[in-house]
Every structure is written in structure tokens, then in C-alpha cells.
Amino acid sequence: MGRPAAGLRGYREIFRIPGVGGFVAASLVGRLPLSTVSLATVFLVTEATGSYAVAGTVAATGALCFALLVPQLGYLTDRVGQRRTLRPLAWAFGLAGAAFVLAAQSSAPTWLLVAAGAAFGATMPPVSAMIRARWSHLAGRDDGGLLRSAYSFESVADELTFVVGPLLVSVIVVLHPAVGVGAVALFGAVGSLMLAAQRRTEPPVLPRLATGRRAITVPGLRLMCVMYVATAAMFAGHELSTVSFVDEHGEPWMVGAVLGTYALGSAVGGLWYGARVWSMPLDRRFLLAIAAMVAGVAPLWAVPSVAVLWAISPVCGLLIAPGIIAGYSLVREGVPAESLTEGMTWVSTAVGVGKALGVLAAGLVIESAGPRWGYAFSLGCGCLALVVGLLGVRTLRTMAASGLTRAA
Image (cartoon, rainbow, N blue to C red):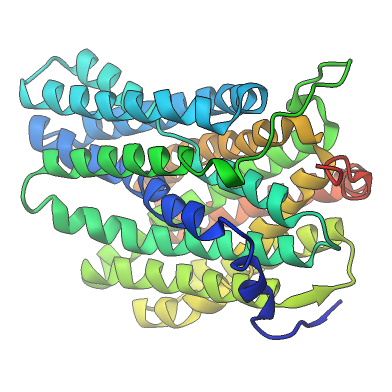
């Protein structure tokens, strides 16, 4: 299956690539909105309107608009380059944040709040997809070891962002909720401009093939998007069920602790995955990681207490990052090099749609039957993702073997 690599040597090697330090620093700032934009939106709208329903509507609309727009941004990036996409997008995101704050502070009608929040969410720069495209360009020319370490590092950075980001916003909004939205807009704009300035590591714009196909026409990518919708719904249901379960059986501060240890387990799994040399085919690794994620969710409906939930959370989260890493590696192998960023952003779209559907459906289940059934709903979503993957196993195998981007 896999054997240990030379410890952390792979991670040391990726940071020896010229120019990596600059774009990694930019990405750590620029990716913060990914984990904070919805939370900051909820804080601002509830302070302005006193309604969680309105806040949820605004946040969901922003997330949906981002999910719809981001593949087009990925397509544009593949056509004109990251710098020419990021610079105007950074200013648009900053201005949209300012307009959103102004609408909330001026007691604007609900429709205007929804529109401003949608613009704020839709213009969030897709930094994670662009960073993975850079890693593919810089570290993808060997036998895959450096790229695996790079993608592992990215997944760990994402997990830490989802731990640090919400805590940071929760502290900032003590000053005022508007400051929280302003900080998120500033992080996104500054980080994107910093990344745009790193021209040394920017992937080149590759000529399009005569077919001119979009990334989503790749059968394997469509299959993976369906799987990611289901797995994202699973994670969204798990998060909402955890909030409800802790609310019933524990104290509010325990929510962050439980979810934080879940993310910590995923980060450890990502580091472990990237430090090994794998002989198992990529498509099989991806399916096994999905199966392990589902197995991690399976016992949660029966946990007797918050203490037990807390104790098993790191183990349950252990294979999340490896699944994400294998998934992005599959996209890189199966999507043409000239459409790689677009392919990455289609994954983001699938995750965004899955989260929105998962929160909506899990909320209804929890409201009517309680958090244990919410965990059961999450398990059902995970099983659906696994079934789709098993039914499309030949498509995934073809995608893993195609190697369409290796020449990039």
C-alpha cells in the first residue's frame, strides 16, 4: 500500500523550490476568507436585523453565488493567467465587503442585504485552487513525490485555516461585527494582491487544444463532483449535528473544541499521507479514503456523551485530508493542463453546493428528530458518495491513468 518516505524530507524539499515562500505566505492570508466569510456574515446580519433566518439566507446566497461563479473564474484564470484575474478580483472583493457593511449599518431592506451579501460571497478569490495549480506547475515534474507532499501541506494549511479563522473572527467581532466583515475583506484582498505579485511562480497560460473542451466535460471530473456534493453534505450535516448535540449535552465552548480536534486529526492524517511513498493506484486510494471517512461518521449517532464524541473526533477525522489530497491529485491527472484551474474550481463548486444542501437538509432533520438523526443523515450522504464512486470505479481508474497534465 504505502511505505514511509524519508520522514519530513518531502516537506523540506518543496520549500527549497525557488519562490515558494512568497506564494505560501500570500496564500495563508488570502485563504482566510474561505473559513470566515459565512461566520462574519452571520455576525453582521444578526446584529443588524436580529434574525438568524435572514442571516442564514444571506450567508447561503453568498455561498451559492460563489459556487456558481468560481468555475468561470477558474476558466478565466486558465485563459489569461492568475495575475490578471486576481488583481481586479481582489479590489472587487474589498469593495463588495465595504458595500455589505454599509448596507447593514444603514438598516437597508432585506433584499438589499441579500444582494450585498451575495456580491461579497461571489467575489471571494479562489486562492486555494490557484495555489494548487501553482504547486502542480512547480512540483509536478518528478515521480509525484514532491507534488504529494505539496498537496498534503495544502490540506493541512486548509485544516488549520478552519481552526484559526473562526477563532480570529470571533475575537475581532467583539469590537463590532462590521469590523469582522472588514477584516475578512482585507485578508482576501491583501492576500490576493500578494499572490498576484508572485509572478516568478505563476503557471504559464497554455494554448488550448483544438477541441476547446471545458474541464467539466471530462467524465471523471463530473463523477467526482457528484461525490464531492455528497461528502460535503456529510461534513455539513456532521458539523450542524455536533453543534446541536453539544448544545443538548454539554457547554457552548465545547463545540469549538470538538470540531477543532476533528480538524486536528485530519491535519495529522494529511502529514502522514504526504510523508509516505504509495504503490497503491491513486483511484483506489481515493475510494479507500472516502470509505474511511464514512466509517468515521458511522458510530457518531450512538455516542453517549460529549466527552466520548470529543475523544473519538481525532480518529474520525484522520482520513479526511488524505481523501482531499487524493481527490485533487485525481483532478490533476485527469483534467487537461490548460484547464487545470477550472477543474480545481469545479471541485470547489461541488463542495459549496453540497454544504448548502447539507446544512438545509440536516437542519430540517435535526429540528424534527434531534442530532442523532442528523448524524444518521450525514452517514447516509457519505454512503451515497461511496456508492457513486464504486459504480464509477472504471471512470476513476481511467482518470488516474490518463496523466493529461503531466507535461505541464
